[in-house]
Length: 124
Length: 124
DNA sequence: ATATACCCTGGAGTGCACTTCAAGCCAAGC
DNA sequence: GCTTGGCTTGAAGTGCACTCCAGGGTATAT
Image 1 (spheres, each protein chain N blue to C red):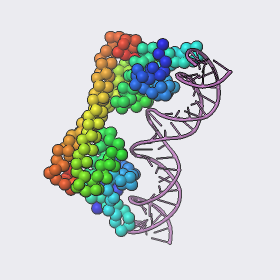
Image 2 (cartoon, rainbow over the protein chains, first blue to last red):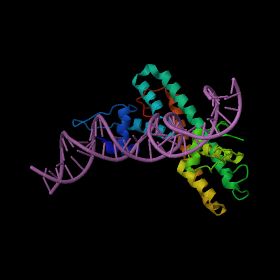
Image 3 (cartoon, chains in turn yellow, blue, brown, cyan):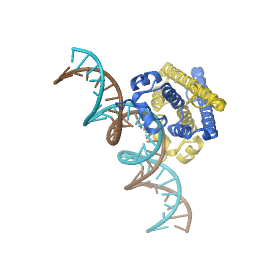
Image 4 (cartoon, rainbow over the protein chains, first blue to last red):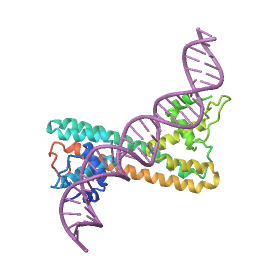
């Protein structure tokens, strides 16, 4: 059986973070053994990995909680889930665009640091 | 002359944030009029815009402070500045990669929500 | 002269997402 | 039987980047 330490290794997530995710409800309650210790299933691990991945990418907890809540409410929320995922994907795409343009500005500065000094219009 | 309210509008930055940026040193001290009111130059505005842009993209304050400090130290820090900008650009590129992969996962889920239910391996 | 509308400062407060802590339970090894 | 190690909980603490506030100054309009 997979305990919380192992689950943390397998999902690259601190045990405290896993407990926190369960407590706030973005992952479903984990099964316990007779001592109250968490026993992780493969599905639990997939859920943790997914939430970590989305958090790392920049989704906030409240969006993930909404999603987790929709899942818990069953199949009739499918349309709402798709809408939420689509909205969040669009947000991530905007983020990528902003970051790309920052990368371009950095590249420009890196490439032109020789030519001008810092009073040139494009430099600070 | 450009006061802080106008500077905020022109740079899309709250006046409180501009004061904060000056206080912590990621922008140079702003010139004051006889009443102690800030008078922003075009260069000040460029600096604020740059810092906002970088912050929005995800650079942290400490990296920006390092950069601002190097600028203040003059031309002999050019190599260090380029190194810092390059390092930060690489970090942003990694961020973009992570975010892109999250977008792909979301796209996959959006596209396949009909086919399977949530016990499929790729869904949570 | 009084109201209005700016600005200033230092310091406290906020929101987010963890992260750490204190106190305690249970099982295995010496 | 007692220590060690892993787990449990609720609650408090942390770090980051702002954001707000109290108390006060100055200039313009009525």
